[in-house]
Image (tube, rainbow, N blue to C red; front, side, top):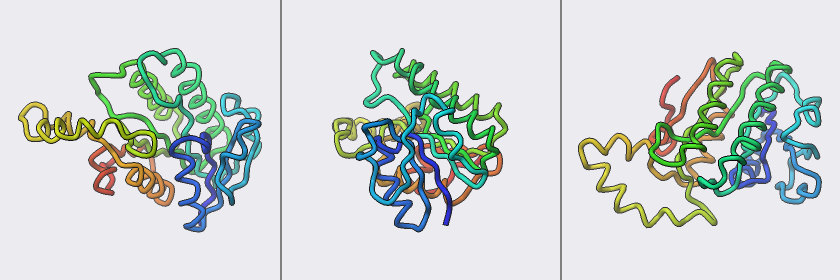
Length: 218
């Protein structure tokens, strides 16, 4: 049984991850904004705080915690470049500083597949967070999905035939596999595996590893 602290637990992945962790016997504490507490799954400890300000929740951290950082702008698009900086980057830096200050055993971050030909502002912010994690000295697992298919996130299914062709085309195969679509259940399984198998140093989990349920190495 582990002690898991989640920022962004009311979001797309958090709402599916928390019940899975609870069902496997973990103790889960999740941060939620005032008024959003009801969005968190039953069974977890709720901390009403601001994920963009670590001083509102840091005191609840303990060295034995694994911090899973899931805060991010919903439905990313090129038009949200400023939000990526104001929310994604800022919240991640706060989480990293909090984890450093409390000497947490493990930090888990959902980044994005890279390099990528699209969503450059989003990729740039996520890459900046990865660099901050490396510089922090934390033991961390960084997961790099491209697009996670699930409720409300099905539109990329129309691209599946093009992915199949690209994966078989010399010169396109590597990029197609790196930027392949990931199912929500695959992503949740990868997050659970990250929590239950803490990294020593930095571990990167890319799309092929997420899809096959195996780590890509460190």
